[in-house]
Length: 86
Image (cartoon, rainbow, N blue to C red; front, top):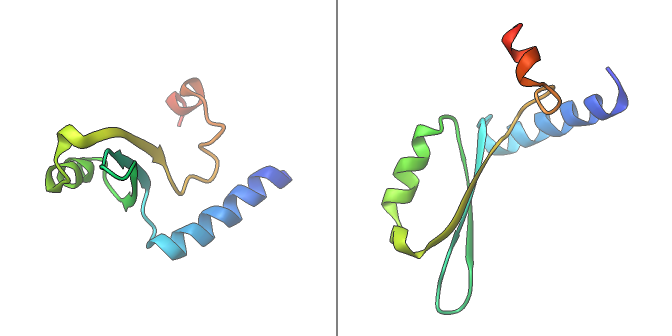
């Protein structure tokens, strides 16, 4: 394991302890009269994002929703071709 992989592993472990070992980070931006409202959620399943959006604020105020893999150790460099071999 090289230094970068080691750092990713450590950061993943720390973040996991803080976020309760969630797998996905959901960053949502809503439009408000006072400017953008940024909300970050951590979920285990992508299907949970549906409920987050439905609970509001109203989805017509949604500017963006970015879902990123959270807690990955080596998948940051994993290619589609490599994953097919797993």
